[in-house]
Image: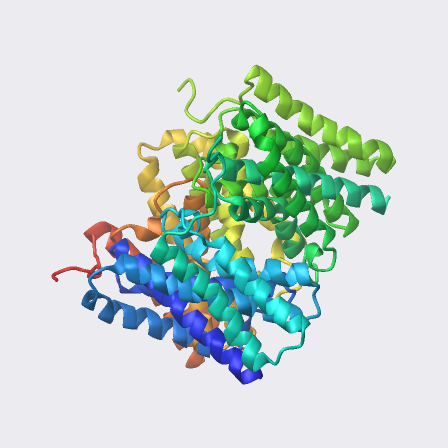
Length: 204
Length: 204
Length: 204
């Protein structure tokens, strides 16, 4: 199953790299700004995850395919983005896909290292949210995370689903896509139907 | 003395988690936003400290009580914060307590690893300020750190006091509370009496 | 050649520390704010580089000269900055020098560890840009990086030049200054002649 997880990881990296490049597009950056922010956003969440899990060195040092994927995704965004009417909408959806993928991958990696459930869930939520946090923070934008629709909750749903499925020893080939679907599904509903949790101070 | 230090560390984590959740309250986040920002703020400073000191993995991976403390503190803030008139004031004081605790703990950990005095002091100041920096940066707020009243100085006083007391081999049971008191005392005076160091450009 | 590289590293650290302290000056910080932001900016890029390259602990823990250099550079800035008419211009140039030095040093360290070319270049660009990113992000300023003139490109030119020269086994004593000159030269031209790459959306 290692191959599948690496594949999903590369996909998540590409999707987040696109979202970073799209955010650079909104700031009207030049092509190297695209590549820099695409790369930071693509590998940021996974880098934090690996540093925190105590890996000897970060994954993309000896697996350069991650850097190439970020480069390719950023360049593709530069050339293809003008075809789209609404960058903001595209960014929102790329971010949602990346978030769902990373929330599950964070939990996968923590569980592989034998971490307890609460750590696996926390790691999933952090991997999923950190990439988008640094993208928006470095670009001086209001974090997508703080948008009124459900976001962190969706990341948690992805991480919790996978942790539960792993606990019941559901095979990876089912647990992985199912958990990603749950996380992405909730975020998608939140975007489409404008779902919100009660805010602090509501109705008081 | 390991138990006491762990206890102080948990207390500092809880206090900073409360300050993170209060900052989330000011941004009118939902309950999972509370938990995320509470957790990031609570474990952020200590995580940086451990990464920089070259620990194999960060403390909260195998000591989940830290994550539970953050979760509990964030939830407690969600339910109790409405009882208080001024969130901003509460946040200021929670931040002051956490800052004093972390400034001393950073120095403690560095000294335990045999680091020289200048590193112990630097590590104290960084542990104390980093949690509040990332809380305010991620939430797009003006850092408490940049407020006109003395802040970094108080963190340095805490770290320097402990380093000095450790140098003179004062027993932990006295050195620890004394250094925390010095750091917190200066910050408290700064808030109450609006103490300021001369700013760059003053009187020129 | 280790001594020369350490020397260049200390110089780059000092230059970035000055730029951090100058940024603090623009925010009218007090003297400890100068030291904190000078230190974070001075050692930030190198710290990230070391953490990512999987060093056991960060360089400045056991080589305190780096902390002393940051302290000295920050204090010198506090006393000397008022002599200059335009802090902003000084900051721009200090940032340019530090950027060029770090872009080459990042590549040097990655190559010493046997990393492939794409990683060496990526590490150069990240070391060069990260210090200035965190300085500007923490101080709530628009990142120099997002300024319209060429910046990331210059960092890449520095890192690529060194990687190429190292590939052709040019002796360090020539490769090092040459690569730094290329990176700095391009950034200097960009500042003086207001060179820009085409922005996203230009002429569409």
